[in-house]
Structures are given as C-alpha cells and as structure tokens.
Image (cartoon, rainbow, N blue to C red):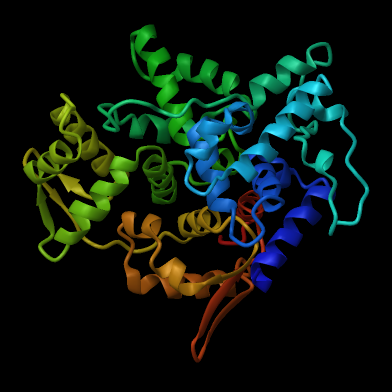
Length: 394
C-alpha cells in the first residue's frame, strides 16, 4: 500500500471516529468498509460504482453475492464482508433510520472494530424534525434515488427551470420538501407535468438522495449568474452521461472549426443507441441545455462553439466535487479532467485559476518543482461553499 493511500485510509478512520458528518455519507461509509476487504487499491471509485449500481448503501448491502461480484473489482471475499454487515444490521434489529442509537466507538483509529462501520445518522440542528416522528423525518431527508434506467437518452432538458428554482428551494435537505416546493413552483400549467418533472430535478441535481446544502447555498449566492449555470451543467452531465459524451466526443473535436451540425449529434446518438426512437427529441434537449447554459449558441441547424473563460466560484465548486477528499492531488489529473473539459473552459486558464484560488486561501498549495506537479485541497465541498458565503472569492 502506498503512503498516500495509507494516509487517505487513516483520514477516513479518523474522520469517522470524530463524528464528521461527511464521513457518514453512503460513499464514505462504503469506502471505509471496503478498505478492510481490499488492502492495496484506492477503493473510492469502487464505492461510487457500487452506489451508482445499487442506488444507495442499503441497496449495496441488500444485493446478493452474485450481483455484487458482477461489479468489476468486487470478489467473493469483499461480497461476504458486505453481507456480514447486512446480517449484523438485521440481527440487531436496526436499520439506517433507527441507527442513531448505535454508539460511536471510542477506539484506536488504527484498529476500528467491524461494528463501527454500521451507518450512523446523526441529528442536524438546522433541520428541525418533528420530535414525534423521528423515523419519518430521517426517511424524507435521506431518500433513495433510483438510478435512471432505460435507453440512456433524454428528451427533456428542464435546464433553465432548474437554474430558476434552485436559489428558491426551502432550507431543508428533504427531497420531499424539494418535491412539494417544485410541484407548486415549476412553470408548467399541468399538475401532471409538474409532478413528472420533479423527478428530473431531484435526480439530476441531488443524486445522493438529499438536497445537499452545498448546491442549495451556492445557488442562492450565484442566482442568475454564469457560475450557477456552470455548476448546474456540471451536475447535469453527471446525471446524464450522454450530455458529457456529446461534449467530449462530438463538440470538442470540432472546436477548431467552431460549429457542429445538429445532424452530426443526431448521427452520434443514433449510432450509440441504435434502438432508441427519440433521437430528434434528444438532440433538441441537448441544444436547449447548451443554449440555456450559455455554453454554446444554437440555431436550427448548428451549434456555435468557442472555448470559455473560467468562472472562478464555479471552478472551485467543480474542483472540490471532483477531488472531494482534502489532501494532495496530481495536477495532471486536474488538467485532464473530463468534467472541466466538458464545460469548455480554456485549458490554459486552469492552472492560473488554481493559483488564484491559492492566493485567495482556498487552495493551500500548488507545486511545480521539477517533475513534481501537485496541488492540495483543504476543504470538503460543504466547507468550500461556506467559505464562499463568507466572501472568500468576493
């Protein structure tokens, strides 16, 4: 195990034992659990893949051994450990909603007992849950998001509506609260349409099953600005991989020309998804996203493109989303990052933007000494947005 990997695992254990809220997310808990089964690799991508495949941590634990082993990187040894944890949860008559009664272990962080990995959901002061219904409040705050199934194409953009709605969302992590607000405030006359579109909003913007404060607070800070449009586009691409693929495989290769025919995008989608029947609607939705995000100018036949200047607050948000664990990171991974490329930010402006974040105290270190090219981060995404609210990039 490398020193960097070992240090990361130590931080996972330390943050969990300290009661760090971010250490209790589905991905963080699963990552910590996997470190005890897979000793010599970075397991965070595997944890994310499992969550994406099975929906959330409960779904991972509930999956059978064959389904778990079908995920690249999971062998029987790891699958058995996951099933043992599921059994212990059921044996103790507990589940995620009721698990706040489980004690936080006081142990040497170098030797965490297995029961310490059981999910713990702590009460949050800013979310006032009704004392007579604690279980229901927890269920509504951290609700399972079912991964989208189907062809992989999409025919509804809803981009501008999301940008308009995000800054106005209630101060709550509950997706039920978000859904109730959206059903009333989405600008569509049909109640049926509003209800259907609510699922697009929650799945695209809040894939972890709760309305995270980082995005809600960022939206309030940058309502109506390009920073918010960039961040919404970033999360949109994460939820709709086809949007990202069109950016990387169709639009960016055409940047020297500056225009892309809609027919080229249509042909790409038809080849990628030969069984889909709504290619035309999908191209219209992609054009709407590009136009409303201000990433491109669109007309009936073409997309008109150019590389864009970096919006610093949006850059900071995407940076801390792509590198969520505070620590040292390779500059090459940032410079080659697909999320930044999909935003059409000028590649030569990435490093200056990073140095600007350093000068503002957001990023502690950027190093380009000889062959060592690294940068470090000190904040989680939530901590970053809190610094933005305090005016660090004003």
